[in-house]
Picture 1: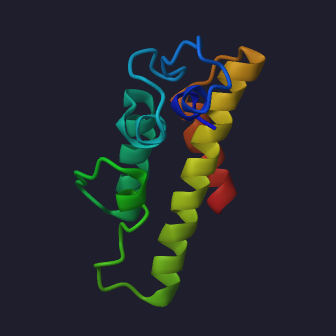
Picture 2: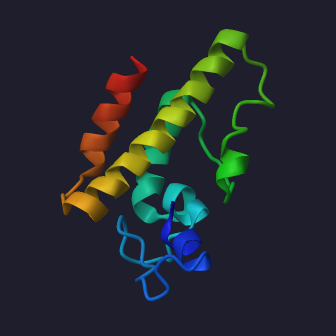
Picture 3: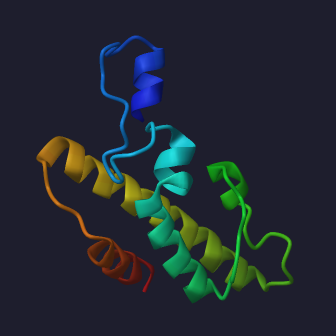
Length: 119
């Protein structure tokens, strides 16, 4: 769960809500996966792999639909959806490494891991 959700349910009312990836915004679902400057670097690299040149979506739900309006084969659409899930999973994993293990995570490492996972 992200920090805003935990605080909302009273799990840790005094929790610092700052995003551990960028140390700027409040850690909501959309911030962590889309609006965070660190995550955005990951997405823009992946959009280049998908040959998508721009996207103005600001919610994770909207991002999950990228490619649905394009004339893609079923195989290409499945590949994009799979990559979307790999990116989300890997960003979440990086966040957890920072929060729970105090590790430094670099975007280049994450991109390499995403490439490996979708290969």
